[in-house]
Image 1 (tube, rainbow, N blue to C red):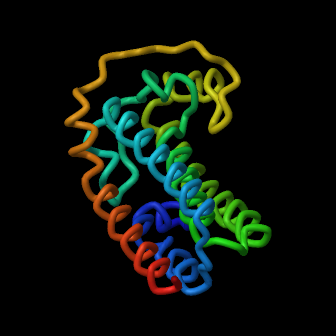
Image 2 (cartoon, rainbow, N blue to C red):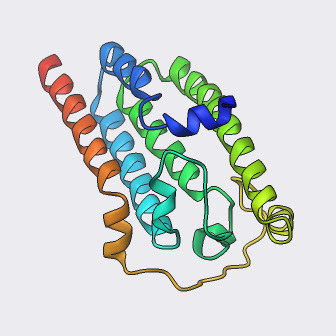
Length: 188
């Protein structure tokens, strides 16, 4: 198994040591909490919205897909779920408090390496499975930073479907926020 496939398979568990580290070193302050929670909520809303355009296959432990999704947020960037994850992880990092000058660059480096390896494995799979469609899509739509704003609204499923697909992420986010809340209350 290649490293990108390994990271994809265990993507729900690999960030756990970083979150534990943030909880240990956290020195939460009110502005950090507010900004961190805003980033986390924004990221989760983006994930829920994005899931309205995907199939259930995005929740599995194997890289797979039934089609190339190129509507909704996928018409602006190829990896809107990972963009949302960047916001959520940055939110946890900011939430941790006064080590931002060190933790934000560390987080960006870790995130960049981690997701680059996953994306390479995913894009290799998609290029092999959809050789007539995916290379054209990859050339047309940037990975993370929107370069063109040609919106394709597609046919999203209802919001409840997006929430249903995101229920484990929502639950995990709520649990982590409870730990940070406990840490904040314990320090004050």
